[in-house]
Length: 516
Image 1 (cartoon, one colour):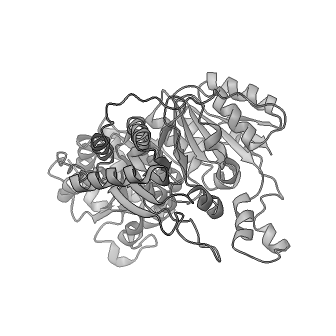
Image 2 (cartoon, one colour; image 1 turned 120 degrees about the horizontal axis):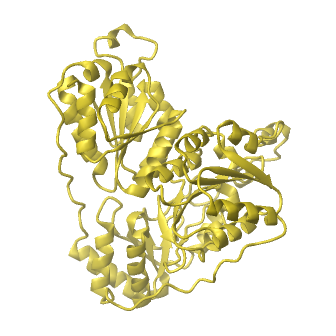
Image 3 (cartoon, one colour; image 1 turned 30 degrees about the horizontal axis):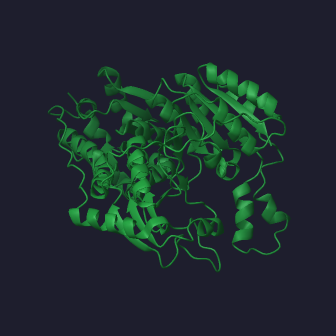
């Protein structure tokens, strides 16, 4: 058994049975081992940013790590933007990064790079295998690291000779330390804060606290204390829709966020970073989005046992077993007439099937979608978490690999989609059940707003041209078809409703371009 085969068998022993790949020469023995050892599903991406984004979507939906296979330092660098998003989402991922044979490094070959140095900004755990006999133990440690805490990114650098040399055999799975639970003192303090605060207090949620069971407990806590419930602005996954507690997020726009949080005097944070922070600094505006006099109390950090902390808090408040029902949300009705982003959101909410997955990278077009879709059938909502655009299409593909029995709906800004359009090819190849809706406003609309927000004066043609996606216009239907995905362009809500409803009944990938 060589090092590569010991690695594959160790991945399987650790429960890693899916690998998103874009291999090169240094990884050929690992490629061969994936062929020889049955049990790992390999999904090819035509760009490393697609590979890492698919691993992110997969991990968010399965709550377990996939592996990625990347080629040397430059391949890892290409994957970096979506690894940044995955890191912010606390997604477990095991990166296998091929590299030059250990004895070849000193010759400074063209692909030579500081691979560990490239990995560190996007990884919680980094190691380079030193021999074929260490690979299995290294892989087991990487899997344990990925499964630790709220979910981590582990990057194992695999020099070529450690893959082809003789190994001792696979390693068994290592134990993963349990998440730390909230202390009794923290629970009692949180209960006191919420009782005293009433409507001026907020239960501020993130991570697993946004799953259905925890949201129901948050609903009981709010009913018992009168506190508000809010989610952080960017979240890896929220379980929402009819029958679930509708939770608003901290808005992106600073002034809107400050207005939404103006009455908060006390905050109990559960799995969320508090106070929330603006994406960027703006002249004359604060960096944090809660009032300066809001008293912050952390009940559970994101890497702690968030679900248990809410159960303990409900016990302390005497409401764990209280009768509770989610507020009734009006059933969504499809829109008609002029094609607008908000009208599309209404129709998506009305026509989507139960248990769908929304992969949202709609950016500016979708800022109002969350409130509009509270009355949709139960579904999961995935967001861009790290602000690095280009995650939406691969996030949808990875979620579809993870959940082949669920419809995936991508809400996709056109500018962001151009970072990773190759994900459409993978959707076609793997026959993934994804319906992608592209908001073709042909501009970086968010940056037009930011140009004003930061106080840039009198933008002229040079500035505006850098934010415009015309001349030529991107033909999304033609692009999708060239990558194997059928599609259609629509310019009225009636046309959208017909096409979208048909695709909710069909299976396989499809793209709808909205002529906004």
